[in-house]
Image (cartoon, rainbow, N blue to C red):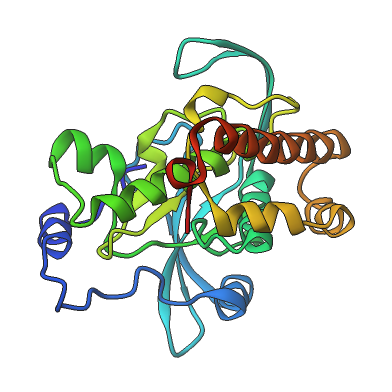
Length: 272
């Protein structure tokens, strides 16, 4: 999604020295962000240039002290048959704003911190997801295809990408290969946005061959994840079959990590 930011300023920020502290990507985090998104007064809701087919809009909100931006998405559709970005034909694709909230809630359960705070909010007559704006960010497509920028720490970057790949397959992201749905902030932190086409009702992983490295903390969170708690948190946003297949994918990821470790060794497969 093209965020309509001043790309030149973002490039300069990404290229800044390690001594220079970039501005926070999120103006608020955690409960403070969720409360602001739910309760702040909506000043405006406008269209903005973006690559998304789900037509998200930019909301400006204020609580009298802070005036911040957020992304509002109200889509809730089912496509009986649709062609994915990779050319595959998908049946019964549910494109729903509730998936945006589900992705954030799952991110919180796992302690990943890669999905911006997202809540349900009614603006005017429309219910939708409201997600905190990521400041000073460019899309991964812009970084790679347009600006050709390289991360300053490739090891840390590769670890982030590996974690992201696992998360995208855990939520069965239909737009798995769409790098316009990934943001890179001024600290080179990765953010996952545009998750409305996720949580497909498939028990298998989308591409097992793409998962070759795994974060130990991420695996520990998956191992410790309580099925009852997962169902309680996710029930408002996805149905029973979606939760069931999510759990099956979680189980397969843990099995796959063990298989890869046995075959290639912990030093190659696992990272902290």
